[in-house]
Each structure stands twice: as structure tokens, then as C-alpha cells.
Length: 59
Image (cartoon, rainbow, N blue to C red; front, top):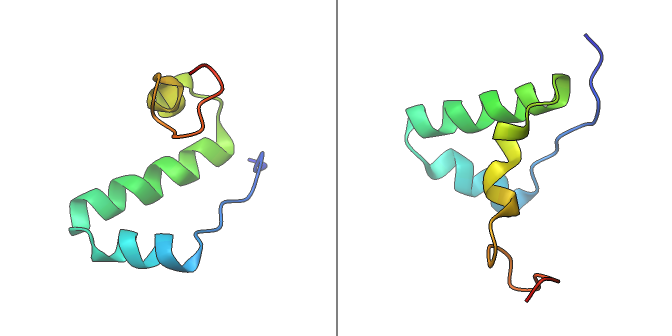
């Protein structure tokens, strides 16, 4: 399958993910890989929650 986009974890993000327990870390990497290959709205559901980002244009 072709990737739709590339996922690169920046230094601080990579350090953070590596500091997590193995089960959580595995799930994060699995979801990142899955997002590259398939269009699954469930993966991005929480990104659409109001107030998630400080500079939310809907606020």
C-alpha cells in the first residue's frame, strides 16, 4: 500500500513517546502507521473536539 503522508516525530515528541509504557507507545506507533495507509475518521476524532488546541478558530 502507498502511504498518504509521512509521519516524523520531532525530538521532544519522540522523547515523550519513548517515555511512555510499552503498551501506550505501541498503540501510538500503530495508529500513526495506520493513519498513513487508510482513511479512518476514528483516528482523528479527538482532534475535532472543541477546545483541544489553544488557538482553536472556533473559540
